[in-house]
Length: 88
Image (cartoon, rainbow, N blue to C red; front, side, top):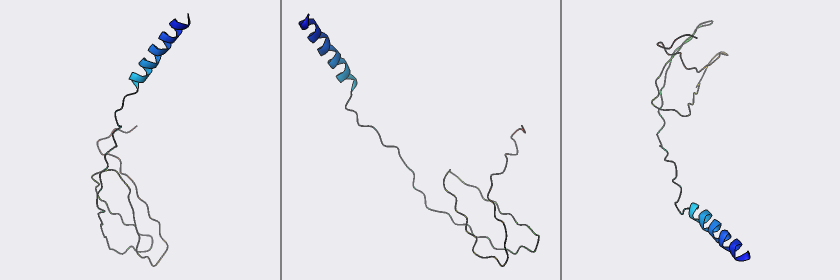
């Protein structure tokens, strides 16, 4: 009986060992891009508004910097709704 147990144990170890391959996992590739700077200038009067648009070519971090303002104002960044998308 003990001989049968050893044989079964050796078979189980062999099966589990064969499942553990020595393949090295691949590392995900990353794309490094240089920042793109867009500069806009303009004057917004009291109670006025202004908007600027730009297109991006890939997902990532967006940084917006307001260089100067003589008065308190709000700043927003958004993603417009696709014109061809259905409402819902």
